[in-house]
Amino acid sequence: MTAQPQSAETKNVRALVVANWKMNKVTKEAIDFVEKLNAAWDRLRGVDVVVAPAFPLIGSVARRLKDPFGLAAQNVHSSASGAFTGEVSAKMLVDVGCEFVLVGHSERRVAQGTTHAYGIGESDDEVGRKLKSAQSAGLVPILCVGEQLVERDRGETEARLNAQLAAALDGVSIASSRELVIAYEPVWAIGTGKNATPEQAEKAHHYIRARLADRFGAAIAAHLRILYGGSVKPDNVVEIGRCPDVNGALVGGASLDVEAFVAIGEGIARARERKG
Ligand code: PEP
Image (cartoon, rainbow, N blue to C red; front, side, top):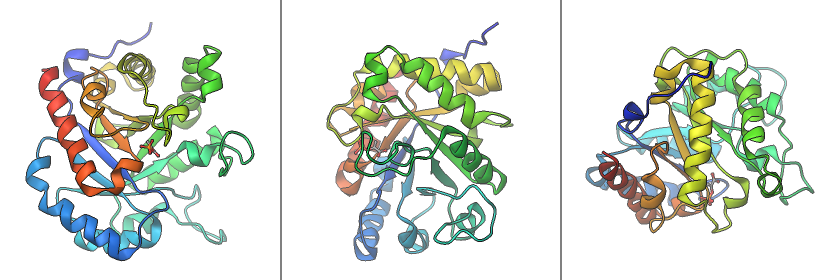
């Protein structure tokens, strides 16, 4: 029987917003952002906030980012150590102050020459190995899943989400809902200015939560944070954030501007007030 997540509890989960800076900013710009973010802490009381800078910026951000804001890396290698030139291990990320790491971002999953000019071609299985490597070092993985436009058009969205979740979470166990975050990021909405409608987002989030309930049990699944990502902006965040199964946002382009990012955090908090 399929376990049903408890929606009354889901709406009380504390929301999370994550700034994915991708390959943007140099040290001076990162410091300027963090100082302004720190100064805005009072406006962000209603939401958890995490910043994911590129590797070279992590140390500078870690030294300045105020508690309770959190730090994430954008990628991690699947092996604990070894001869992997240019790669970074989970233990190194913990050592420089990261608590979270993105795994399976679509910009790393897609193969070059397909739908994206840039692409590493990371397979679902490799994403799973990265997730386990992160977990074993004590990092909280933010697992990104999402369908391509062609998959949505063929009616294969749920099959794709199921395959990504199954491969990444195979053999994974968690004792608490704070050990894992999921980000639903429809690939066609990332960096395109075309966000999913609240109905599309809620349907996908609800499906994901049901699969998480099958795997981890209804009680844990009800409290797992499932973020929406894909062209989130201050002017569309409240509408998306009101969906019962949306527990926050993973923000790319709009997170480069501190004022826009803070406005998104405030918007998520406001949307949650309306949920209750
Ligand atoms: C992302 O890269 O995770 C993302 C959601 O980007 P954007 O907000 O720019 O669509």
